[in-house]
Amino acid sequence: MVVITLQREKCIGCNYCVEMAPEQFAMSKKDGKSVLLRSQNKKGFHTIKSHDDIIFDSCDKAAKACPVKIIDVKQI
Image (tube, rainbow, N blue to C red):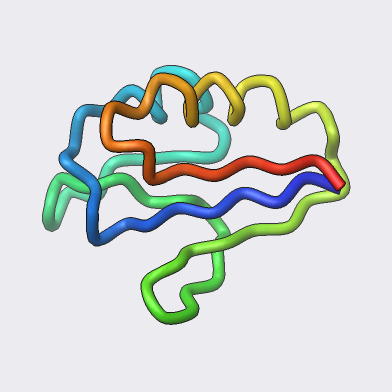
């Protein structure tokens, strides 16, 4: 299982996450910040849990590319 968490409020809108993992991330047209698609928001932490282990590599690249380090990816 892959768990991805985004602290959206701290996003600076660089778009790296969308470039690295477009199937999981998009940019909001309202405020220009990253959106973790199909996520649940809990106290500012947007999280998805997926049984699709294939998404780990692209999301891990997105987390490493993020200049403000607001993306966390775990494989459990």
